[in-house]
Amino acid sequence: MCYHKPVKRLLILVLLLLSCASAQDLPDPIVFGQSDSLAIFVVQARAEDTGFRQMLATGVKGVQGSNSGSLASMLSSFLSVRSQEEMIVSALPLQWVRVDRLGADGKLISNMAITLKGWRGFQVLLYNALITAPEGKSFETRQYGGEDIVLRTGWENPQNRTVFARVKGTFLNCATPDEARYLIDRLTGKDDHELGGGLWQTYAEMPKDQDAFGAMVNKDGSFLKVMDWINRPETNRVRKAVGSERLEQVVALIQNAWWQADVVSDDRMDIQVRFFTANKSDAETVAAVVEDAREVLEQGGRMGEFYLTTQPDGLKVGFSMIGFHDDVSRYLSTVKI
Image (cartoon, rainbow, N blue to C red):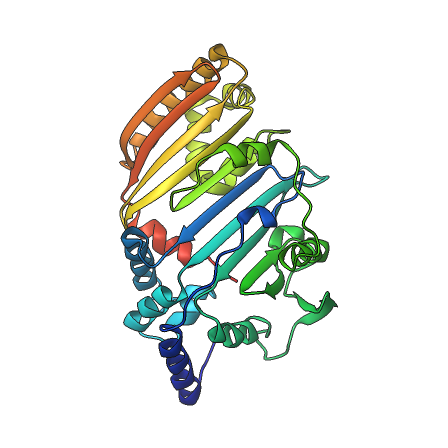
């Protein structure tokens, strides 16, 4: 993407103005869910969080000069590293939410929402860039509830998640236009029904005081599908070491789970996971596979401190992930709005 000098100056001016703007409250992550949702992932970054700021700064430096088409590479095309870091701080608080459910074909239907309350006026410039195709033409749009639903390239395939909308400072990447309409109703208060389903009971009871947190329920193999999304290479390594049949049998014993993570620095994240099972015997079976998985992950030199405690209704697992400078950069190079 190419920007002329006057546009660059305007963007930097807006950035300076935004650094003085006060942020509004972030939307409750549950607003993005549905009663049949099976997993929710939430990341919340705030300006006072040193660890998150370090991680974001590392990621920005890593994608400098990239042509991946990601949000980070787009920013690097017209801002210096220092300006990008300043802009990230001015954008905070930031919230990223992903919610998954299973479609009729057994594949995950996923919607993502990124709320950038600190950018305000800059969002208009960013939005205009995002609704314009590379050749300069605007994507097809549909009106709903006073909002534009933008059908970006590949929107016909739900797996692409390229149905786009912006509502009250939140950018939505949806699987289908119907999913976008639902989320627009939720964000604008036209649909405020309480959500049922096992996921939301687990979510309501879990702690939510860390940088990242989430919950999952296991239905029709959804747990492994979600794990494949989180980190398919590592999941495949565990599958190979444990055995595919044994892994699937043991994972089936997990009824639901929640997790939370604290970003300590750009190179360390402390994670706690709570698995729930029908009884202690099932919990011990799951614990044995978790120990096997730990040995596999330790081979890559990524596992730090670790603990595991079996309980009557499941188990607690705590560990540190270290050495992910490069992963942060790689991930930011894929984040597209």
